[in-house]
Amino acid sequence: MFAMTIEEFGRKLRAREVSALEATDACLARIEAGNARLNAFILVMADEARHQAREADREIAAGRDRGPLHGVPMSIKDLVDMRGTATTAASRVRARHVAEHDAPIVVHLRRAGAVVVGKTNLHEFALGTTSEDSAFGPARNPHDETRSPGGSSGGSAASIVAGMALASVGTDTGGSIRIPAAACGTVGLKPTYGEVSADGVVPLARSLDHVGPLAASVADAYLVYHALLGGAPPRPLAAAPVRGLRLAVPRAYFCDLLDDEVRTAFENALGRLRDGGAQVRDVEIRHARDIAPVYLHLSLAEAAAYHATTIDEQPDSYTAPVRLRLEMGRHILAEDYVRAQIGREVLRREVDAALADHDALVLPTLPIPAPLFGANSMMIGATKEPVRSLMLRLTQLFNLTGHPAISLPCGLTSNGLPCALQLAGARMQTDALLGVALACETALR
Image (cartoon, rainbow, N blue to C red; front, side, top):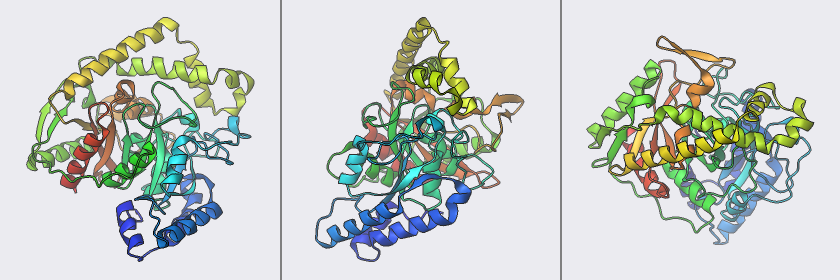
């Protein structure tokens, strides 16, 4: 369903085979035709996008090329401030909010010449994994509209897969870029903590929040990631071979609860990587079973602190499930929060140790395919598990530790739902992780 990659568009744009305006019009036409079904966008910015596209075409014709994102139609999660537009966070709480300034990442995208077609739907305040609790109604999965696109950046992932944008910007506090990327079958990158500015982004939990790209390919994610950093256009990402890569699989805990078809897709992907010459061995994260409680004590406490005033003044403006989670955060004791910080450091050291002799960890992104809307629990073998816990289970570790992590498609279930694997790399080595991801993506095609 993808329209084209950023790389493909860039080649055609500079060969005068397509214009930025034509690509933007095509995305806007798909939004007009499909947004009533998918509900991927909260705000469509058609007039402004066309103006930006015309300006990009004029600049390129005049020889002023801003780099690989120049003229690229993109979407942005409606958690990010854009001057003169509402930042709703998919909540009635912020119905009257209008941003006075662009977030730094928006400044960087404008400088890179990107064209913003609109702001995407999400799980209210990013506090959920399914994108169904939104003041604007649920975003839907392009592969099956009865299913979740993942969350919280569900509208962002759906917009790419449906060809409504060539890339998007999402946020990730427990997996909110990687989960929808996996559920919808696209690429999603969570950079190292703190690399990409989160200023001007409505926070969920400040010590866990990350900003990053969703895109049709690893190469595209690399281009958007560098634009978000605000530096000069990067050199092309080198296509390294998979042969010789050292990959580590943390099987205990991370592969304990997997849907049968997800497990098959993951093991098949590992087999193809081995066949390509990658070295794949098992490692252990000893305190993996502490991940969920450590994460919850940090994320809910920080979220409750941010929402303390509005949860008192406007409780009925929140969706009921999100309000309940925020109320839970108010009951976390200070000593529990401090213990969780200690647990976070233990986990960070264990991930560092697991990566010491490896290029990346490799594990599934989601243990289940995209769930049906309204499903609160699912059977995994003989075990009944909460959907929310399942969807966070394999991603939240790297928010705690700050390591960069990326989700790649790795197959389909028998009914056509995407499966994905996740790669995590050393802190402050996001470019190196992207190189590993490109090699793996090439081997898995």
